[in-house]
Length: 428
Picture 1 (cartoon, rainbow, N blue to C red):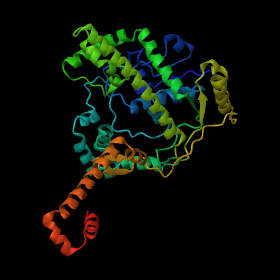
Picture 2: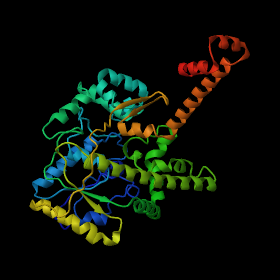
Picture 3: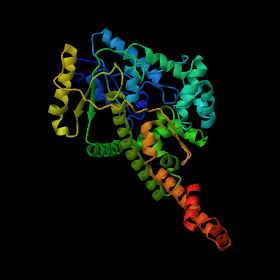
Picture 4: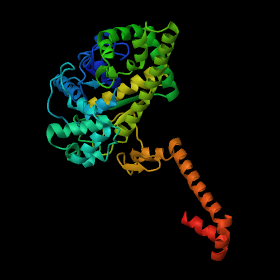
């Protein structure tokens, strides 16, 4: 499409935006050198792997500048992904910028990272004091989001919820954030049958292994992670180290050469299977994001989303490429495309940030959908069954006590057993 539409830009925030980092080309499935020569690519392999404080705000700022430059040259930017959270942050005004920080090595202090080291419940209690509205929407276990909201308040003096209210109230804003930043947007959503997609993702992992994935992981571990592991300060929650495909092989990498070949082989198989499972789980999450944040997005600033079925790659030309080119060309010329955008019914009554407390399970649940799922879950039903059994045992114990010989005379004086039993059950 870049060639046919004479565009020169592909932003590629792949899973966990890992393509921006140098290294791990195979596991992050970076665009090949040959593909990059076909048209100009940006936002690939420009961040040092030791940088752990590169955020979605940094990505948005750099990508926005590139997009504006491409528009200035009368070309069309194509954003490809990848992590839909980063694409959303690029298209809509949904982020909160705190005080500027220069991107440097891991020595730069990141307040959010420092906060994440503290106890989650203590952080949530502090947030409830400075921003009770946001605290009510976040689970105490969601430490990263709680820390982010505290960081916003500490570095700006304004609560996170107040920032979001200002965005929502802007012209074109809505419940999920501020207005669109670029006019005349068009989103193409490539989707496939889940079974076909799962098989395709498994094969992708196998192809990565055949392409030299293990050698790439060993080299990266030796250069960037081995020392951290030895000092017990490895971090798989930030930077490139959170990429899918690296932490899954942690046990294999740190024990290779230090255990029997049989054990090493078992750990390798475990890592491969884990990588396949995590990859498929991530693909499902991305599809849910498209449905919840793009297709079901409330408010006026919602660009059309056109679905392209990619289950059968033998029909790529007629099912994907040709319709995509027609849609894009129609947008360029200001015409209505022949294809209709995807429409999904939106449940406007659903509150995704509602607070629920399950006394039975001693758990906090955030969101109507999550609450509905929880009360149908095995763990909740188990607790419910356990509580009913305890209540039933209590009733039986009282009934047995009520008809004991010592109490028989007293019961006869007070009334019939049926009457007493009824009163006891009512009391319980």
